[in-house]
Image (cartoon, rainbow, N blue to C red; front, side):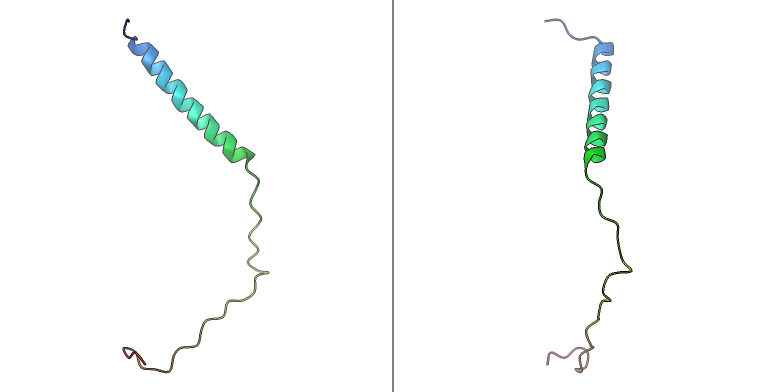
Length: 59
């Protein structure tokens, strides 16, 4: 079996990389769009009240 020429190997590698990028972009394009972020309609987040114990104590 004869070894492949350098040009054939380079063309095969470039073709493989191009195919991978094409598949990635195609799957991203075919994915459904994510819903818009509606931060103004979200309920306000309430922070918990600070504990009455001094820092560094367990109880």
